[in-house]
Length: 411
Ligand SMILES: [Zn+2]
Image (cartoon, rainbow, N blue to C red):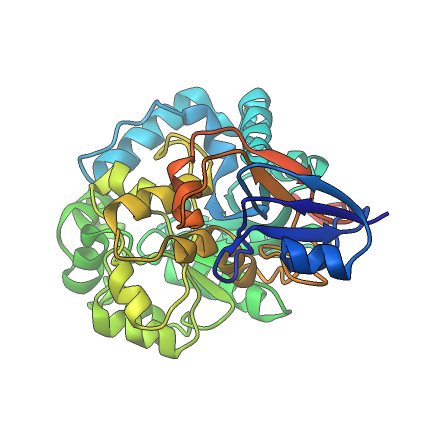
């Protein structure tokens, strides 16, 4: 049975809104037709439902840490990364968020309730993987290792590399390096070798804040002092290079490594990463929360990059709603067309996570369809971003086969 939904505006995700648009889709949500309501109704036979407001594809949150959800509201921000992470580590020791199943389940419900179809979820424990799969959320679980002490980091990296999923399940597991300054070089090499072994994606926090640059480039500042305090004379030598140049030296600027944050990246570094084909994932609300900074969105767009968006964790954000990231950017970068920001929360996310059937309303895709009953002005994408607090409803969930596949090895 074909259903046709017409709306004040259809936001396809990968292009400009269609005012007075309609979408035709089959019983599993595969898109049969999209265009102006008059054209779609003339071309396609089906039951027509007219709704007020906008219709858009399911959202893609390209960077989360669902397992930290019990830390919501527990880690204060605004005073820089080192203060934030020290606070996080002390609270985390008490709360043990990875074992708080209720908070994880609630977070995944919130994610699905915000109409999220897919995630790039970073994990240290795989604690959220089964819940995400059970709720039909697809994408990647980036199984992360870090540690600056060589022996511990290497043993952890070997465990992580051994846990790679062997088949193509709906939420795939891939090894990931936390960040270049938190992961021993030997562990970085093990994780990267595991990623290169087969076609997969990975994720790397890069150029998140100025103290990361200062440590890697000059070996001083808050990050270097923090690690020296922890490790004393076992602190590894600093590379004396900028985060992006160091990543390039390690061969980590390439199309299968998502660069998350890039908040502290400079124009020439953005251009270098783009030249290497690196996908970008921005987390503006997390950057504002921790450092009170915004990613250099205009320079990134001027370089020709189409960034995706992520919420980061509830330890540095108030919600897991990736559309709220687009709305936050809309307020602060009014010169960027609203539909480009919606694209970052939908199609750009699907593209960087290698999920070509999601993130856009296009014939043949099955992104899930979302309805928001909001007042629609001539700029329909801006109308949606202004209505970010209004309820959203799935008209149809994405057509993702539920194939929970066993984890090969969990250490
Ligand atoms: Zn993160």
